[in-house]
Image 1 (cartoon, rainbow, N blue to C red):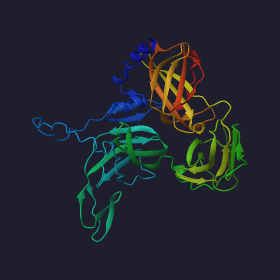
Image 2: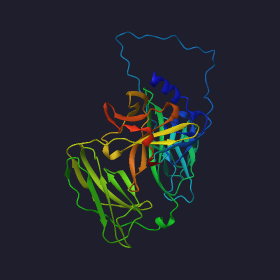
Image 3: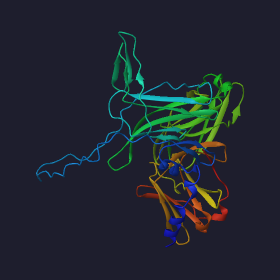
Image 4: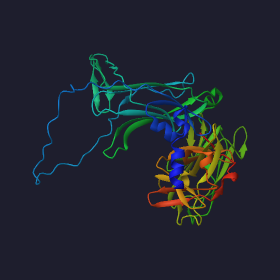
Length: 419
């Protein structure tokens, strides 16, 4: 009964009354344009839904169902992702704090809706589309119009489907912008295709810094048994950078502007990797000025055994207006073999499952060493009156789950900085 009462209180949340939503609420809202806030919430405005498409006269009735002989075999239902469109160029260094996004499909499978993400935060979800002229090439030349299509020189035609959006305002710094075009799969899950762009906003001094010289790793053990790994690097002499990243198999694990040594011509940095998932890894350090980056040689590391104590979700609780709290959890990507699929909130005293969510997002969490750690996150808006005395969050990847520590609500005071 307590779980039912909690669920009724949760779904009465004031998400419908305002524009500040959790990422899961924003995605379920439908057509919306959003701005990320420091606490992980999104400030969203609804986007007008497109007019309904032309339909048949209501007087036209479909034929009665027809049943084929039992011996006839029909293929299983299937769905297709949209064809990869052609994209307008996205400048790596926009003049202001906005970026114009545009794309065209000249032929092929179109999208049911499209999405724009900025540094893994939802900025747009829309079913609004336009048609644009597919630019004519000079006579005798060809230009690409969409994946696999060529527009003949001297001929101009309209796209089958296009999308345009002005993304902004963007905060100073690096932005990874992802555009996704989606259709529902037969099970209702998104089936998407898309493309990622990088842009650097502001910071002209960093843009003028030029390409840094190549960093080098200090000694790193090639085989470990789950213990923490100290990862250090040096750029002994040359052009310095303004920030650095640690990568595993080309995926960013963390980003930092903290340096152990920083002179006019040399730099060094260090971090400790805890709970690195079992298996083979390929680590690299990347030293950057704006979007100009130099990568070290890869350092292979094999973790033979999982950590003795698995990494647990970190919890944080933040008060909101009107008697509501925001519960958030995070788990570093480096500790997980696969992306989590769902999570649960439990009353640790009973124990009872109060909530089961399938929305797990990628995020960036600032830790106590001023490093931004690539993580998996989840959020929920909870009424204070429904909050149990002690919380426990369970994060699962299929049947494999990991529990957070059992934490009294009064102790959840430190809130990791996410964005």
